Length: 350
Ligand SMILES: [Zn+2]
Image (cartoon, rainbow, N blue to C red):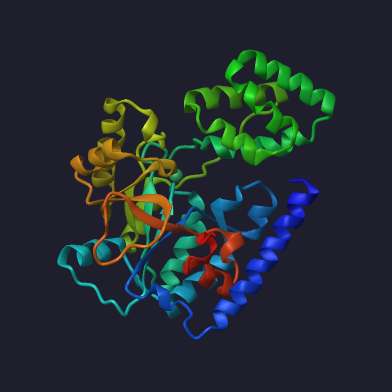
């Protein structure tokens, strides 16, 4: 990030903190949430020591102490429901318009959810649902953005001359990745990750492997996602598990046959292996369209969640396009900021 962007960013976060403090002091604090359900999206929950030793995308984590405070905040200010209860309330048209409902969800099945989030959820008696990419569970596979994030500090340690040598070795093997040169050489990991997104996982995996080879490092393989024993232990303690496909492929890019397999196969795996399998689908990367929504419905799911910001009410517009609120450290790290974020102020523009 350049100096100008850094200043703009800190002015923005200072302004947000001031506005959030004013909002928290208003008599109508959170009154706009009455009669709505906020479905919260978490990804990773990490300790400060874990955060100090790795790059994690800013939109992907909250720290353990922030998560702890958030659960206490939710207990104080909201009626926290399990997703199963929410579905039952929608089905029976029971809805209290004086309540601020809230549902806690996690995407991807990170091992840190088991290590750090699960004990806190149990301590506060907060129900939650975790969406699993079923083929990853119990394996040592890494999602490609995390492999790039792991390589990033190792790449940045190299001299300019060495970086040019590595880049020419990689870019001659993979013509498609020419467009990533500016991000790589300019030290901009967010642009690098964005630049990879339109490409297939096979392509990205080959690129990441050649990059690691050219750098002379072995990609890490310690397990990052939970295994089925951990899933079942959590499930027996009241955590529900929904589907996040089998392989986390972006479903807007796959054939009908592959789509059916991702949607149906993951549901079959969940029902076979999990005590509390929840018939709710979570679109990988939030990408969906009519064709995918229909496939999810036909496979027997009762609802599906997106990454689009927003709330639902007693009568959702479309059960297969449920809106959620993404929770991450920068915008939710104090009670005032959390209230401000839940009330939607970070998403009101113009
Ligand atoms: Zn995901």
